[in-house]
Amino acid sequence: MIAETVCSAVSAAGLGIAVVTAYRRRFLAAARIAAYSLVPVGLVMTGVVGWLSDTALSPTAWAGFGVLAGAWLLFATTRAVERRRTGAGADGGAAADTGSIRPGTTAPASSTPALRQGQRKGQAQGREQSQGKRPASGDDFSDIEAILKKHGI
Image (spheres, rainbow, N blue to C red):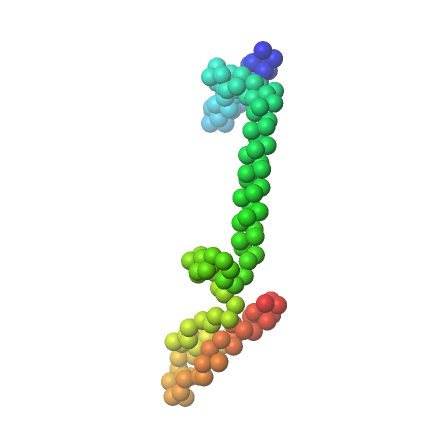
């Protein structure tokens, strides 16, 4: 009964503010305020407010929320443990299915060398053609290794 009275008062105040806003010729803002102010009365009329007040005072409902929180906690914990696991464990190839990188694996060789800092793509291609040779496979990942070392990885 108190919730319905409070919701009605809030709606009446919101409609009053909407009228004042419309008087100032801000009709779009007044319409938006009127829409927001009608929501509490609509919730009371549909019975949502009564349902929420019954739920908030029900020990069974709070026990249900506790069970849901426990389920969420278990789910989050198992996900965290799964992400921390490295290498192939009891699940075999499950890590390969998720796209994770295992220790000891290498990336395939690149068809073009990585660009050096400050070097444009056209300059790199012109230099390779003028030299007539391709860099060794160890040079392909030197820039990447430098970036990883810079970030402490």
